Amino acid sequence: MNDARRKKKKAVDQIDLTAAPQTTSDDPGDYTSIRVPIPPASAFNRDRPAGCLLQAQLRHFHHAESGRLPREKRDGRHPEEIKTEAEAAAYIAKITEILHPQRRRKPRSPKPNPAASLAAT
Amino acid sequence: MPPGLDALKHIVVLMMENRSFDHMLGSLKAVNQEIDGLDGSQGNLDTQGNQVLAQPLAEFQGQLDPDPDHAFPAVDQQIFNGDQSNPRVPSMQGFVKNYFQQRQDVAHSQKIMYNFTQDQLPVLTSLALNFAVFNRWFSSIPGPTLCNRAFAHYGTSFGQVGMNVFYPQRKSVYERLQEAGHTAKLYYFDQQSSSLEVVNLLQHQPQLFGTYDQFLADCKSGTLSDYSFVEPNYSDHDNDDGAQLASDQHPDHHVQAGELYIASVYNAIHSNPALWASTVLLVVYDEHGGIFDHVPPPGCTSDGYSAGPADTQLNYTFNFDRLGVRVPAVLISPWIPKGTVVSADRVFEHASIPNTVTSHFMGAYAAATAREKAAETFLDLLSLPAMRTDNVVFSM
Image (cartoon, rainbow over all chains, first blue to last red; front, top):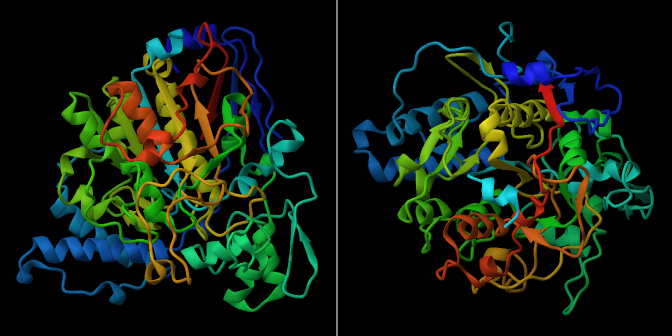
């Protein structure tokens, strides 16, 4: 929220959304702030088996890898050998880096990420 | 031209995964009777002949395991309840029976009827109630993710009813815009999640892509493209920032993580006043993921393709003349009257996206499929004579 908006703000209703969301007022400049619940740490499971969507994505990355890279530079794994979400993510990142290289970025403030603090998981 | 359209410079689409309208927004009928959700009367028979009503018992994770089948033959059963006659009428009576096939567990099969309550989904329901919710936005094909997403990118799936949409013969909406001197970008979450549009666009046109970090930076700096398509995170994984929770809401990923992601996209646009005034955000789901919805999908203009029995895995040819199951869709802009419910008279599907984007920025596009040309556009919903000054913000 910028300064101008902050000045216009009449009231911020911190709504606990374990109750039903309240509607906003029609008054000019009125704000309703809605707190978004955070998933529990137990939601995170990097060892979850890769589902049908990830399996399809793996097949497509394998197709791209096979078509673009010389054999000696390929990952060497067949999509069916990749079992978990974390394994799929690692393979996908490797091929994405080739297809769409990213510049090294500076450290930044964290984006909203419910799992970022799940260091123990 | 309405002032909201005059001001419109950016269209952003966030496409989530695999949830039906009734599952996510059906509870809102109790808040606004105009919303075509659940009233307690909708149900399916289970395999033992017992009536199973839609009930507000959905859980964020762990309930829809295994992932409900949403391949073409499964969706055909969900919609037509096994009726293979010709002609036939969609009854929406085959969801429980279809889910039973995966675990042979009657009690578990009934969970396909469960929906979330309003308070469980504060982000999606608040946006729906404060801006515009569509009563009739359907997936484009009664089938899985990638053929449906293709309609958002190309206005067709090139005859595919499955997950392998390779080598399209038509230009994507991004290519059209760029060739016409406009800007367009697909933003994927990070390299570990990447894009689902791999074989056709990421491989051959990587310049079209950015990451979610870049989306946030572009919103902040006011350098967002004319058209942006945002993808969620498709997996639980680690990156340089630590553990990343899947935010796509695909079963069995945690639904609240998707709520956070939707809020994050919204906040990124809303927190830049100039961008907020000149942007419309569509939050939509690619398909229903096998989960119950009570509205029968209507027929539609064919895109000129057909899929034979080898592809449909049924004993008939599909001519792309019927839409898939209804999905949640919410349009957000300060130029939309609060509490807009788009009536059931207007039918939208994912081909509405390229048609709307192309029409707004380029005008008529002769090379579009007949299906795309016939698809409803949605920018007329930005109808207010003056921009709203009330605000919804999400704190995370």
